[in-house]
Image (cartoon, rainbow, N blue to C red; front, side):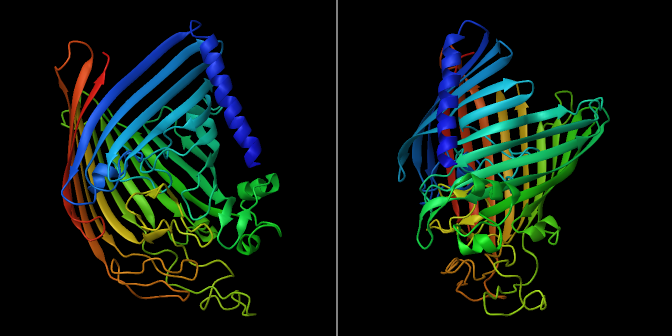
Length: 503
């Protein structure tokens, strides 16, 4: 399965580039490119939280650094019945974690509302304010784009014969998570489907489901190579258990590490304001599908103001995050000892089915992370040894705004969180050991332990045009961030950069 999709990935990229070269004069081309240089300065060995988070993995967490960046994107329209888009984002970074890498490199084909894409490209959850919000519980802007092949409807499309009263969007994707993990060569299965109701009415209601699975892989310390056959993909897609060739726990429960999110909310179109209200429930086990932890959610309200609005903002967002409950007090998994958990629901859970432990997994120990960054909400703290998350029980408040006039842009964020570490269970030994939360997770269930840690993180940024060159637009980028607390640390830092792009 993995080899087939890898070949398709390479073939699709080659065909897209070939068609683009042949049709260079065939359609209308829209081209954009930019060059950027800058430096990040921090008062400690840690980069301030909002200078490094939700930046698509562009910056290191290891304090002061310098960077340069070159972006190129081109869209060819009206090539027969489709459009082709290509792009790249090359970043060079110097500091304690120097690197040179393509943060993006992709080819996309658009036709009839559908999109087929391959490579590294930006892909986030569909309804949240990702620009100044804290970040989705599913896929946020926090980690570098994951190499993938994706097909689907990326914008709302009307359902036939409904007069646009019903609209849908959704996609299916296959990705590669690489070898910087507890298990090498892990695959990503990603799909979502959302429905919007309301059409031209000022109020539209939406709901949907996103489903993510980490599966397969090589060189697992105890399981060896985990198969990636088509039969395994089918079980991953349908959330079924595996066969005798898959790890034992995947046979007894579900093949792979399944995660996701239930999304619901509404859009309101006022005269000068568009309002979006969203509530997102994390999925970690099948119990989440029954909404047994309804208090665990990311809740937000976002306002987008028109140019005619008397307010000084173009966007404003407030979000509230709560993930402490996780299906209630810890109940142990009692495995293979003849004890009937089904007849003793207050004592234990079914084999291999412990309480939720968001973003963590016993077999795929790295969890919901890519290159040591949370793929989802950045407030969830990744273990330094790349062995999962040591903080996923969080109560957080967040506000953000953007004010924009012509080529000038001002933005700000403020986040306050109370952090409770993790509730230990026998799926995640050793996580949380040390001084941070005062707990040690062993192969026993800890129902009480640890302490609450507070964290404040602030951010202010400005992008201002400056007349440095006679040709093109030069923008001064200035960002200031400040942290105070025991989770992300206490430091102050700045980013100063210059971006040039043609008019």
